[in-house]
Image (tube, rainbow, N blue to C red; front, side, top):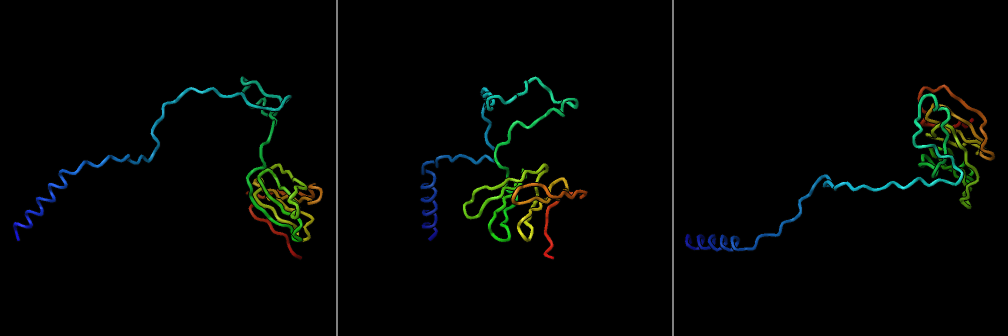
Length: 169
């Protein structure tokens, strides 16, 4: 029996020793390997004809900060909240830039309520004729859904408004 076990062990040793070496596998690198930097040219900015573009040598300072103007806004902003009006005829989509109002049947945008401060939340009035927006600057504004005009502004909160509700009374 001892001879058989010794022969079996010798046979297994020879089989594993004479087997071809396994092909190496790539090792996992938790971070990308460095790639040599290559110089690339930056394309000139594309703007509409007639859009005033400041000279690249102009430096923004405390003296000229009042002259800064927004040249363009791309996109509609990130969606913060979506809510349907109480009667289901309107769909309001809130973004930091304002509230987009859509008809629910055609999904056509009928109004955009632009706000001056980042919108955190909004809600419809119970009758659906107004929308209240709560902003990052701590203000609450009441807007008409038909004309998008500001009806009333409440301010004084020391922190951002994150939730709103109308009284049902």
